[in-house]
Image 1 (cartoon, one colour):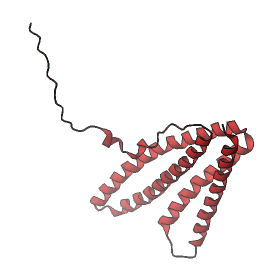
Image 2: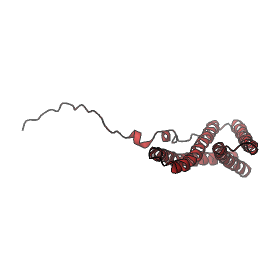
Image 3: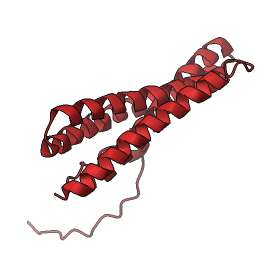
Image 4: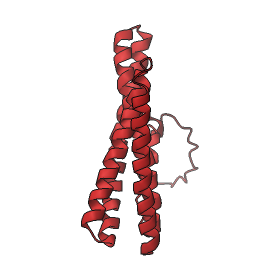
Length: 177
């Protein structure tokens, strides 16, 4: 394990998280005096929360543990994030279908409510994927690999099922009895 590279990348990730939190909070403050942008604010809050959670985790781990333990804890955290993305992605897909049904039936009140939930959910998924990507880069420098589970989550499970296929049967040899 190249500890200097891992240390520097870890420090850069902590700095990047701090900067992201400052930017998200500054943008949130700038919008206070302006006309309301509730959807942008929802997205910002989701990104802010994910980055704040990452920063708190990184600060806690780096102050308490040895460098090798830090790498393994980061691996566990990345696996936790990866396992959270899958159910959230499935919920996003099912709620999206429900939103389409609401819209087609002209139920605009439920459409509006569900749209707001979907904005937050989609933003949280994107933020977690971005954090996961950063952690994968960090873990690569520590020669640790994260099992790739989040890439298949973008494809809905229904699309993976075979609904129809054309099968050409092989010739079978008839055995005379």
